[in-house]
Image 1 (cartoon, rainbow, N blue to C red):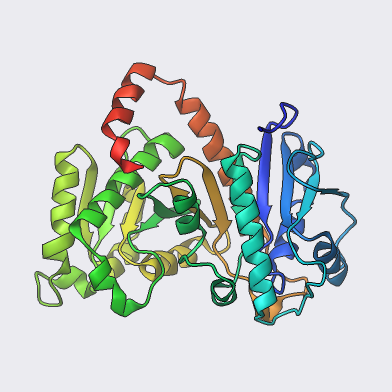
Image 2 (cartoon, rainbow, N blue to C red):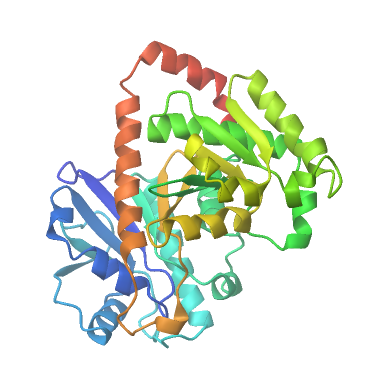
Length: 356
């Protein structure tokens, strides 16, 4: 079953951690009446918990439709599908197993509806990694979960901002595990997938990509490590031979200090922190997490559940709002690109079949 024609964009939103700022940033972002001209929203969460948060931070009244499933959505409105146990309780600022179970239930239901074409786009409010893993989630984050759901081995997490796009080779993991997880093959696939996403999702016909080094000073010709010479540089050479415009490996601190990212369409960092730390400094609260290389559009804000300010009404919804708008832009770009030079696009798709 698919969504009705009345809904130009059906945007699914997972509630995130019920003890954090998820509902606050969701409802603040959805206060703009212009958002409903083309969009229908469905929150995978709990009407009761949503009402608690709205009352807690004294938000203006918003009409919400309670739906049993995604076939009962009211167009151009906010809908909520209950995925939580009716006995679930909010404990603001606390890390609880029950919160993890509610987060996981929302992800499972939203992913199923995305796979069944009942929603067009998935935007995730922030969950807590500890309690959601405790509840049975076995992934480093939502991108890895969605990738498995759609049987897509190769994807790349991209932080998208107004000034810079920074992708990452490795998912969040202990620092000690990074060297073993880093291979020339993996770096090459990330470069390929990033280049393809820049073309398909951002309409950049010939993207320029900068690749960072792993070690201090990009190893300084092997003085501080062999990863650059043995893994990163060979991947860049292979990608260049395939016609991808990429350069590096660059010394990360010098690269960002000189604002060299302005010369490129995207930067490929090696580790999650190497990407997110400069991104947050450059973009502040404007940034969005996006997963490139998937057959579906998934975004999220760049912040966590922020237990320390939960229920205080001071959370900044900018990143979440931008996650919605970025997802719509990418969705539209994909539709537009489907109609551009179909013969050439077919050739590119054939060449890129192994990416996903």
